[in-house]
Length: 180
Length: 122
Image 1 (cartoon, each protein chain N blue to C red):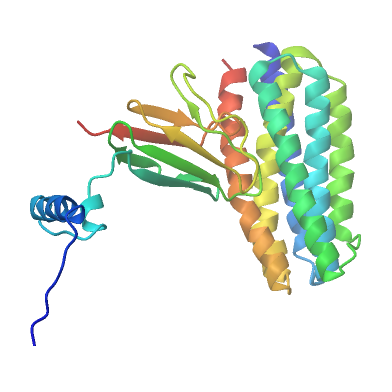
Image 2 (cartoon, each protein chain N blue to C red):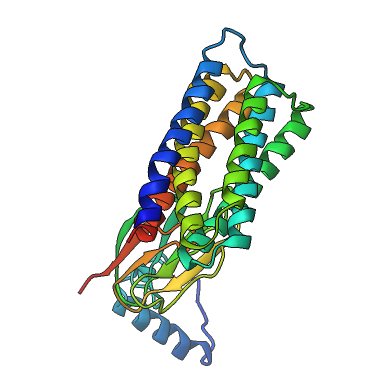
């Protein structure tokens, strides 16, 4: 129980930091181009695959492992669709402030995840997944979709949102289980 | 001028039998006679936008349900209470057919928040 009390405020703080950092950056006037949107979208998916990889290595909890495998497979499927579309449209993803912000936060999170084991790890991983999916859904809906010019890329992003919402609901379900 | 229709004796019983059959079926066309098929009815549940559509379906025992995965990620269709049956992973655009033997709650074991219900009408 002590571990749960110790981690919850820290994770909430980090989630809030991540969330606010994303939006402080997002409020910048610079509008993302389609290659920049593609880069941010692929990076956001790649980061969650990496989080899932750590969970698959470190967790022994059946529900956490099932969730992590789903995240890995689903986000790989989304990247495959994005790469196929980028190839078709001859768009080369371009690194930008949002991509850099996502990667910087992900590095910090990965270090925290890798320094924990057992139940502490499970709680930290799943709480981060809840916060991460909330932040990514907000970023996709308020930054990426509105700023995308190409209709096919916009449609792909719109189609990804239900999957992200389902992932969030799944993460919240597992969160209740690991807190029991 | 008289026209005499000559019917061979061998053909006569066949004609009589055909007339009898037409009378009994009320002279319905082939399509009309197929109103009550021998096999169960086919229903379709589409998996799209991370949902089973329709999420609840009413069928008769012996009917079949075709599940079609339109999403970009894999799903499955698994009986929820005892996992009595499962489609196994359905990749994008794959389909699976379930012959209904009874009412059931089902879900996607890959995304456990996705749920559906089959009700067999009495």
